[in-house]
Structures are given as C-alpha cells and as structure tokens.
Image 1 (tube, helix red, strand yellow):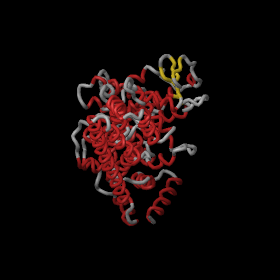
Image 2: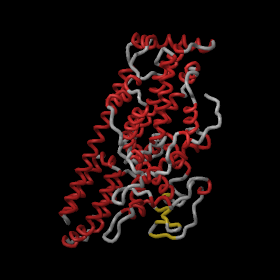
Image 3: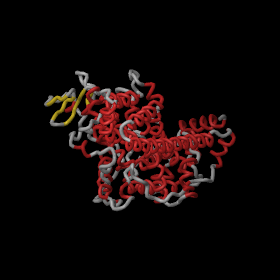
Image 4: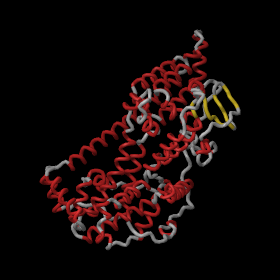
Length: 507
C-alpha cells in the first residue's frame, strides 16, 4: 500500500529491550517439559534431508533407537513404554508426546483401557495377598501417570467412558493402598473443577457469539440508516489510550489461548482425514476453542476496519487510523503478535486501504515499520526473529509483563500443519514415526509454556465488553461505508456502490 523506504531496525525504533529473556518451560513438577525435545532435532526436522528413514542402531522390544533417541516403534510397544512398573516410570517428555500423538491411531478411551489393564490386571496372579502388595507397590506411579494425563489433557475426560475408567481405577487402587485411593479422589475432584470451568467458558463463547449475531441481524431500515447516519459509539469514546487498549486485547488473547487443549492441534488435522478410523470421536470433540480463537482474530480485524470507516469526517477517520497504529505498536512491545497482525490485517482491508485522503492525513512511518515486521517474505523471517526475541526476553523475565508471548496463531498452525503433512506418521515397516511426533510435541509444548502465563494487566471491563460484543460491519457494509466516506473513483466503483446500496437496503 505504501512505498517501502529503507527501515530502521525495529529494536531501535521501538526501543524493545531484547536482552531480557522468556520464562523457561514448566517446572520439573509440572508437565510437559520442553527441554528434552530440543536435542532430538536439527532446526528443520521435516525438510528434505529427513525424508528418508535413518539407519537403525538399537532395537528393544519393538522400539527403535538412533543415537539413544527413540525414533519409532510398534503401537503396542509404545503403549507398553508408557505403562509404569514397580521399577520403571516413563520420561515426562515421552508421556506428553505419546498422549498427544496416540489419538491419531486409537481413541483415548482405548488407550486408557489398555493402560489400566497393563497397570493392574496384567499383573494379577490370583493370590489376594500378593496382588494387594503389587498394587500397593505400583499405585503411586499409576496415580502420577493419571495425574499428568488429567492435568495436561483434561478434555479427554469429557468422554463418559474415560471418567468411568478413572473411577474404576480408583476402586482397584483402593484394594491395595488407601493413600492412593485418596490421591485418586483428589485427582478426580481437580479434574471435575477444570471441566466445569471449561464448560462455563464455552457457554460464555456461545452467549457472546449469539449477542454479536443479534447485533448484526437488524431490520433492514436500521441497517440502511446506520450506513448513512453512522452510529456515534466508537472505541475512542470507550478507551482513548493505546496502551490500555493493547492491554485489554492481551487479556482477551491470553484468556482464549488458555482454554486451547494441546490435543486440539492434532484433532484439527485428524478431522480433515476421511480415512480416519476414529472420526466419530473427533467430530464429537471438535476443536471448538481452537476455532473460537481463530474467529477472534477475524473479529478483531473487522472491528479495526469498522472503527476506521465509521466516522463521516476525514479528521476523525485519520485519528482512528493513528490510534490503531499506536495500539499495534503497543501490542508489539507487549509481545502480543496475534493482535498486532489482526490490526494490520484490518488496516490493509480494501475498504480501509482505498481511503487515500484519510491516509494522507496520517504519518505512516510507524505503520510501515510494523508492516515490515510482519512481512510474509522469506517465510515471515522478520516476525520469526521478533518472536525469538520475545521468547528470549521472557526466559529471564523480572516482571510478569515480560513473560508474555502471544504468537501469530495462524502461522503457528501453518507450521504444525506442514510438519504433519511433510512427514509420514507411519514408516514402511508399519512402525509409528515417533521422531515426527517428538518434533510435534516440542512445538505444542512451547505453546503450552506461553499459554500458562497469567495476564498481569488490570482489567477494564467496559473496554473488554466493547471489544467482545460491539457490532462490526460485514465485508459489504465496510465497502459501502468506505464509498460513502470517500466517493468512488471510477465507473466500476460507482456500479459497486449502487449494487451494495440496493442489496443492503433489502436485508
């Protein structure tokens, strides 16, 4: 949209101190841990150099290792590797990776049933005393495994069969160990609280979505009048401080991120496969929070465009433009790249970009810098550099604000998609390609480390309510508002305006 003059380095222009670093991953008492993944892969594990299977060095019970790293195995061997024994407990990075990826091959309920059998029933010898002692010896490790499963993948337990298996395991453990039975009861109580909070959040999404739809679906006369008179309500009347608005956007982003389950990244791709044997499970547990977050990005883009096209006077439109440029810059400083990209997307929509007289009133230097930062060239090289800087900054953060990293979500999904599509899930010998799933887990666990951060900013309820529920123009309404702000420049645009007026007046 603008001529691209040589740009100053963004770190100098915005004075973003990248010497501070991003928080480490989860503490050793939490799941998952990202550290073990890093050493397993080169920077591009799914590029052309990894399209062939590596030479096998060692094989143990159906598991194949290369340089002491697990790279493949049969499904049964991988399940066996998950199951604890009196003398063995699986590495936490393996637990996370297998629980994440196994749903591509079998239903979580099937895995749960198999694990429960291998943990308890498989070791029964028929002697009550011996069986009781064995259960007592292994019970703490079973509780630990199920704790990690329920804490990291709680949504799996919305399936009644999963909850039933969990309760049955509680009864089995009670046979040998009262302390483990109590631990299991506490586990179930925590899980139920999580699922209740999730249900309340999803209900709030439905409510806000219904309210937004109701605001758009007005009688035709009201709609037509809106485009002529314009509504007086605008974001600047609610919040005229770019820093505060960026903080409130960050609240929304972090709340919605926090409800996305790691399994949703896998299920989003599994739903696209008609040959999937467990598609009924995936259709039942749709990636609703995943999709709601993408819808939020689209809403924010349209909200920005609507706020700019609303005012009749050119100076008011220019003020709105300048305001959102400043909001975008504050989002960048915070580490909120998703809102940043949504704002840039809204400002680059045709109804906004064609307002040449309005843009003429605005100093676009800051906007050009931000556009440069999110330039898609070279696979978003500039953005990826900034994201690494934000991640490094929060690794040694001294304040809660410095911990925030909110990635450009659509690109994050794209990276995972190409990893999934670029590497086979099964090898020619029928083994599961676990090397691929190590890398998938590495990326998803990094997302979880971003997701766990608590937003440190004070909530402005009035501003939050406005951002979530105020009505926004549709694509046609935006185009007509743009033409009414700055008239058509040629016959094609005049015909388009006439057609839009006619079609919208009939709605």
